[in-house]
Structure formats: structure tokens, C-alpha cells
Length: 85
Length: 179
Image (tube, rainbow over all chains, first blue to last red; front, top):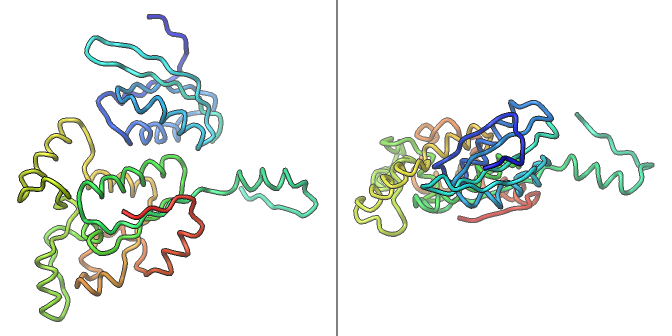
């Protein structure tokens, strides 16, 4: 499938449940440079709502979401841009 | 960075400044010593901390059990409270489920399923919480009542306090939970 969003870094949270994806995202964000985009892979559908909510609360930018079926499960890719420290 | 607000600033500027500097805070009273309820408490606490909120957890009654070190006996002087400490097991890894505990069989089955699904248990969640700066307050009244002494609690307890400390913290909070 074609990728419509570009990312600088990737974070794999496949197989993990809430709250791990957002905790790992927030940890990674602490090390990331401002302006970079992180792609978070998750198979927990809650991420579709949780990631925009995390961005709104922390003041980071939610870039977009892609859904993909890898044959065994649905994979949700969320793209988040670090816009502040 | 400190923002100094001066009276000659326009009201919108003051409001924006406040919104920028104000950190949302979450306070959670953990009364239950059940594994499932403790999981909910720590999932909310770690989630909030990772969203940049200041999180304080106040442990009282059975909730205090997860701050106790496993196998640690009560060092209370009188036999009644020492007996109580013996019957009331402590340790984050020993918490029972509120339902389907079945003398421990149900709880260990649940733990197995959680492990298979890479779900963190209470000890792991507590480690994450401490790492993210979640503050723990142990209720001194419960400690006295149940014969739990400071030396039998884990090192990550930030404060030993009572209701006034909790309320002083909670009145500034935007999210207050009782679990």
C-alpha cells in the first residue's frame, strides 16, 4: 500500500495494550528532536482516539492515521510530530 | 522558565500565560487492595503522567498493601496488630482479583493471560509510575490501624500523611478519583 505520511522514526508497540503505547510515545518524545515525526505502530484500536487525545493534552501535533491489515491483524499507524519540548 | 505576569498585560495574554504554565494534576485515592482495581488506578496514573500531568496517589486501607514489601511482617509492638499484619498479606505481586480469585487459582490464571498478552502487572506498572514521577502518599492513619510500619514499606513512598495533605493536593486537581 502507498504511504501518505512520512516519518523520521518508528516505534513498534504491536501486541501491547493501553497504557503502553502512549507511555512509550511520551518516553520517545523526550529524546526526539523538535520537528521530527514519529510513526507509532499499534494493534490496539483504542490508539485511534488515544493518540489525538495525547497530542491535544501535551500540545504536540497529530499528523495522521493509517490502517492496514497485515493478514493476521489490523495495524494502526499513527503519525505524531514533535512541535515543542 | 518562569513567566511573570504583570497587571498591565491584556486579559487574553494573562489567560494564555496561565494556560501555558498551569499543569493539570490528577489525584487518585487507592482504597482497594484488589489487583483489578489497582490496575485501573495505575493505568490511569501512568497514562496521566505520560500526558504531562502531575499525579499523586494516596494509598489508604487495603490499598496500602501494594506499598508493603512482600513477606515483610509487621513490627508493631502489640500482638493484635501484629496478628493483623500477618493475616493481611502485603506486596504488589500478591494482590487478589476482586472477582474469580478462587483461592488464588483465578488470579494466577489472569496473570498468565496478561503475561501472554504482554500486559504489565502491578509491579511493572508501579515501576513505570515511579519512573514517570508519580508521587505516592501513604496514609498514616491506616498504617497505625493495620500495624503497618514505615520500615516495611517500599522506598518509593514520597510522603507519609493524612487527609489534609490529600485534600490540599486534590483541591488543585482537575481529576480526582477514588478507587
